[in-house]
Image (tube, rainbow, N blue to C red):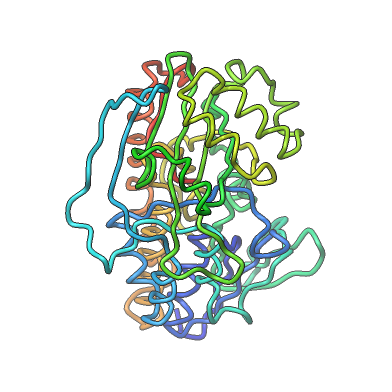
Length: 394
């Protein structure tokens, strides 16, 4: 593989942009195609937890300047993890050791994406949906877009998430399991008035609250080190439950307005501690949206070639444990290292992809399994219905 090879990335989320940063910084020709119409049109969560592995991957992928920007616009460090009953009785609370001020422990998804786009204006196209790809006679990859047009490259990387078009074509047998849990995300802007509403135990880190009926909520503040333009500090509020517990079937839940979703969430916690009810009551109604909790099912290694996958596109990660973004960042760092090695003539492109997949596949699916094991411990049922869950990041 030469240093003039062209790399196509389908998907401009965390993993795709971190990879693009690393490859561009290494001198490769990169094109990123993202179906979102703008950098901010995505309902996928608010606060992302960044762990030690994620920090290491960011340092590996980003230039010093971009890494500094990510850190400056990240949330203030907070190393608290707590669990409480719906009446705010403590179940568990702990502080994680070894967190330094130089580390990044949480980011706002939109601010993170904006920072990762730094220097990539000419490489990223929004509003471009990959429809299909094919291998040409010369061994290159030609991609076709739903909006019309095409492009060619030496390598195609699918970082296009749980509904990956690249995965559907490369691995049509790969499946993603619905865990039967629905998450309703929202957030409450933090002002002097709303800060006063926060129970002391909710003021820092990530805190999980659950009742005995199979309903749980996660609360986590984001207080920016340096606020990006237009951003405000906020409290992420999330509600997790089965459709039965919510009393709303999917065909209604996923068509409701944000305001109606906020009302559903508030009603679900109607018998909780008054301070917790206040958080849902004062959350910004227009910020609520629902998602399904899903997990990728393990696939066997395939024959490596000029098409590969990264992050949720291959090992769709449930949010239990807050490891999804961190695993995608690890994938990006590993793949970037291998591709830059190939660009230096140390190995072929296909050998680089094969080595990446050899590391990525077991690491990714082992992490999925760990996340599901944590969910099973908290839920008490292998079907993941009617129980509790743990740290939620996305």
